[in-house]
Length: 213
Image 1 (cartoon, rainbow, N blue to C red):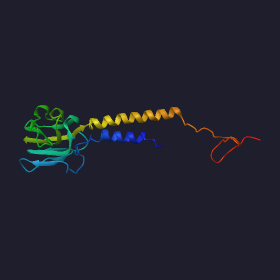
Image 2: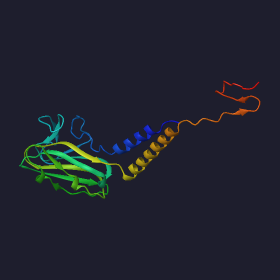
Image 3: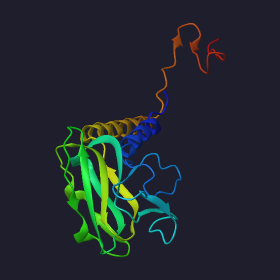
Image 4: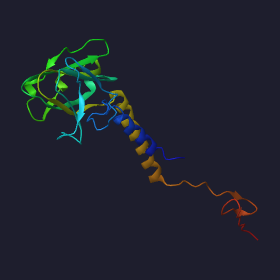
């Protein structure tokens, strides 16, 4: 019988990690920016990639005009989001906002992030803005005013559905218990047949030894 424990363990690990990565190109290290929608509100220059003193890796995005940058992703229940952060370098002459989108067509509206940001790289924690009972589907960052604003290192982490993990863990426990039980009993051999004329037959199917006169 094949050992199913490694297979079951792999399936559980895949389930636990399947929802961990929600944002594509989160630190803008890839030149393929197709996952991000960038729009100029005023002026002609939307968010673009820059490489001077990135917070994470070698690249970030910046804008000197009024502009928005957004990304949509597979829906995830807000209650399952365990971390939602990004890094901001906001000039004092600019106003910045975040807006979250949900599957039912509603949104958080524009929420000012001025209070949690300042010139120089600073971490902004947006987890408290997520509605736990709604399916989160996207985010948007809006910059108005003047000066150069920069963004980097988005992290949006979620756990899989509780029911999936709840089924996975007991299943692993049963497999481990079965493996220990079989190991403690060892291999059970069949009783040696006895023939009245030849006595006990010993050995495998190809070897016999008869006892008698």
